[in-house]
Structure formats: structure tokens, C-alpha cells
Length: 314
Length: 141
Image 1: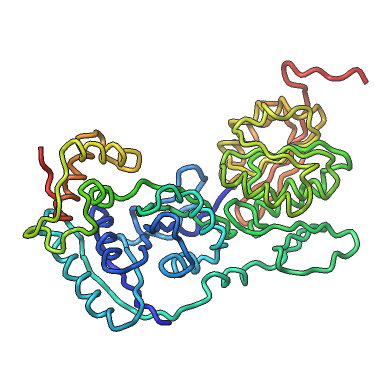
Image 2: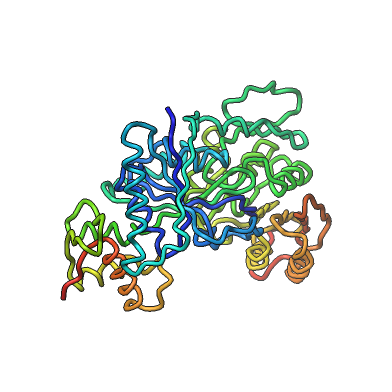
């Protein structure tokens, strides 16, 4: 099947009206990109490529004998808009032909097993040899960060392999897909507490934990305050963003046992010093700093028990 | 988690009825994300709004994971519902297809407020009225 891809370059204020026209003339929906479409504010964003000046509204119609009439009506109705007081901008409409593709499955080719130290992250549809000493983490990429294809995730996976001890209690702050929690459990943690603020990510993490058969080890909590669900952990990994690490530093100092480890990641290089200063204030001694591709991971050792923290008699 | 964004796409699609066909397929396919997971989740979360266009803004990260936020239906969609018409006017200046009351405009403006950059409800109402004019829907007192 062939499709006509119809793209209108229009003003922000006319976007919904142009979309409505396209849908009424037979399109199954529209895709909008451009200056009015921005990432949600929660992420620490690295600037994207410059956005075009005008909003682009794209829709698709099957190439058949109705196409010409539909296209003509779309063009005509968009031309009418300025007469009703709506500025459409250039209002330019371009058409090109696209072939039907296997859109549903094409994405799978992007995801190949990734080896990070002895941890092998793989999607469920790829078969791999388990191999001696290899830790296999099965993650199906989806609606949560952490597929193993990002430097911050990889840095954390390396740090977990170095610092998690058999029988540890681990806290994973901002668990995303659950990749780090699953890896920590497979490396030897006896208990993993995962926290996440995004509901979609919580669902995704639970699915991945189930797939790795680790429900008895890893528990996921939807909360912004890890201090409410965890205490006396041996190690905490926080692959979040600089601001959240700074904000959560006192809480983390309170839940990690003295001598315990904090792996802080998701820090852009330019903000590393700021995070180090804050962690230092909270009693963490930085024992390792590594970086890749502009991202920094800090490993801190918790030096002092926080206020209110009572150490056991043994 | 730290996120490097590689793309943001807004889709306006019928609630509960997303499929891998265009526009979803080509719009998301180019970013190589797990489209079926999005489609399943979108349909589940919008099932209660079937019959309406529910826009969704999808943010795609460098590792091909993604997240999305549902938006309120476009004003023109809400206007058509309020006026009880299927389609906007093809010639909005000459041919009116329906009417809504000012109270309905206010209601729609209220629904739209969370997604709008209007400073006040009056400003949001102005914008809804503009959409009504362009759809050939009269606003009556």
C-alpha cells in the first residue's frame, strides 16, 4: 500500500484547526513537530537540534481515487482560515509518497545485546549463550529510561559490579525500566528497593522485574521520597539528574548505613563539582569519579551516621 | 534518570484506537521505539474518551526509551461536541454549521486551561472563540 504524506507548515495558533481539517478529510490522525512541541519539563534536557521556525503538521492518506479530491479540500480549507482571523503562517502544503513499511517491528533492529563488564543486557527476543560468570539482564525497551544503550546506565552497571556485595540491601532511586535494580539483584543483592516517580516507569519496571523472575528480591515503590521506604541500605544507586541528587542528598545520607556506598549518576560534566560539594556536605567521601561522553558518575562512601540513625549493638 | 532527548512528537489521534498505521507508524518508527508498548498503553489510558481526539506528546530519549503525556482534546474538537456537529464548516465565513453558548465556551476554556498558555480564563475564552469562528460555529449569549 502506498501513502501520501501531507505536511503543512503552519503557525502555532492554527495547528489544531489544520489538524482538524486533515482528520475530517479522512486522515487517521496527525503528527505535529516543531517549535510548539517541547519535551516535558521533568527531564534534564540536553538541547536538541534547532527546531524549525514553523510547526509541521503531518498526516497520511492512502493513494487511491479519493486522494485528489481530499487533497484539494484540505488545501482549500486551510486557505480559508486567515479569513476567519487565524494566521496560518506560510500555510505551505507539501505532498510526497511513502511506501507501507513494517513500522510495528522495524524498531527491534536497533536493540542488540550490549555487554557492560560481565553484565549482558538483552531484549527478550535475542538468544544469547549464558556463558561462565555472565550476568544476563533481560530488558524490553519501552516507556522508561534504561535500555542499556546510554552512557549513564552503562557507568552505573560498571559501578554496581564493583561495589555490590553478596547479600547487600540496595536502594535504586529513579529506577526507570528497573535495569539497575535487576542487575544489582543478579550480581548478588539480597534485597532491592526501587523508587520511581513516573507511573509509566513503575509499570515498565514491574514488567521487567517479572520477566527476570525477581519479584521476590526487587520491590518497586511509586514515590519521590526514597527515605520513606528504605533504611539502612548497604548501597544506593541514583541515576537521575544533578538537581534531584542535590535535593535528595540529605535523605540518602540518612538511609545509607555508615560505610555504605552511594553511586550518583546522570550528572552532566559541567555540574559535577556542584554535586560533589553537596555530597561532601552530607558526609560522603568521594572515592571514585568516572566519566563517559560528557556524563559523570560519582561513588561516595557514607562517612557518618545521619541524625536519628541508630546503629545496632553488634 | 538522566535523559538526552532526541525527539518530541505530538500526535492527535482518536482515543482508544491507535494502531501502527500512519500517522503513528511513520511518526514513531523513525525514532525506533517500541511502538506497540506505546499503542497498548495509549489505548488503555484513553479508552474512556473514545470518540474524541486525545492528543499525546511523546518524548524520545537517546537510548530509544520514551515517555508520554496525554493532553486535553483540541478546542475545535470540544466545540464540535458542544455544538453537536460532526464536522467543522468547509467555508466558515459563509456557512455556519452550529452554535454554542458563551457558557459552553467558558467550560471549554476551563478544560483547556492546563494545556494553554493563556494567562486568564478570559484570554483562554478568546482563543476558543477564535477556534469557533474558524470552524463555522457561532457563539451566542
